[in-house]
Length: 440
Image (cartoon, rainbow, N blue to C red; front, side, top):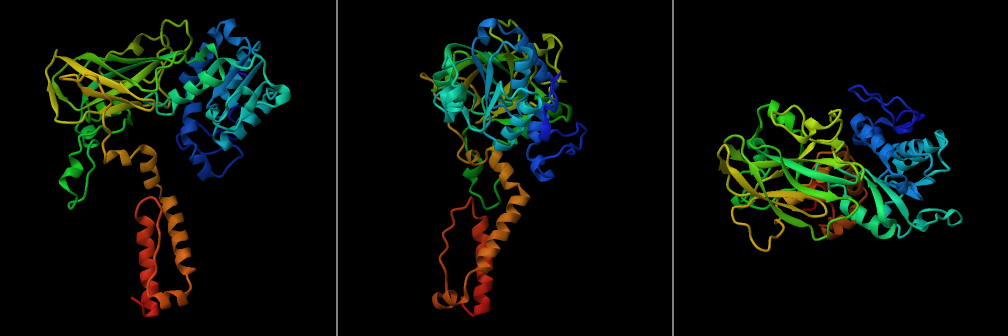
């Protein structure tokens, strides 16, 4: 943000492709763990949308204190205070201790430590603003009038957005609070893609039961870049952009979620394999047009983003895809499709609605794919994690004394780890030790 000194502090990296750290701070491996944060803070379209929103906030929204939930390194809170100095204070929440420390240093470097209070805790862990500040400095009135919360992902809801906002609305905010962003519309298109369709089924080994690959449940939404899939010939867009859901962050939907039936028009014939969706944010309550979006760019389809002023280039958000379960459905050009769209507090799903059940129910998650959300896949692919576990398992095996092994000619191990990996390593190590001791 213009006018902020050292706003990224220890987490700043160069903006070239290699993203080599150029400031003091954690070692390179630790910095790489925050690559997602570097992409976000370098997203100029995102920062411009928030800066514009702060300038448009009415005076009513600035009467009292503001909350910045998921503040990261504190950039948005500092921008708000610089743009609207009449605001008395920002209370910022950040659950990641490393980012919270950087936010505190950024506030001090910009002489805002008296107005920006960083709490290294989830906002859902506090029951009132008095819990988040020193009792001597307890704020009055006891609830905030403004909420800044950029806790959105490609599918809009995946960063606990709704539960976090619902908790804040119930315990930390006035009843007529202002939120930035204030609302969001979810839009989508249908696509043909054998690549995406293959994600619906777990690819089992030759000995896996056939039912393993025939689960008709719904996969969790994935992140994709639609433009790249289209350019690579791995996806064809079959429909026009259509509206799916709307969310008001100043009047939140119920915890039970929603199910609605919508229509979409096929712009060309093809197999409908998935629905790719994105969102448009109205940043301030009075905004008639959205000013922040993760709509796809470079695709052969008109979107609402085409008419947005200063069409943004997406810096770090992708789009999300909902894979359609069941038999493939062929659509004809010009055909009107009926789709059901569901949302919970965490995800959005789509299904073809030939005959809509009454009452509508949320989709059943795929029993196989439910074991493979993105964080688990990343953990399973983390080579450094596996090497660390391997070293610790071998150390534990070497620490076993020979005498008990000889006496019992066996050993019982209770493995409470994630999957069979550690058990397999340990059994191999123990088998070697037993062989050397003459046991079986």
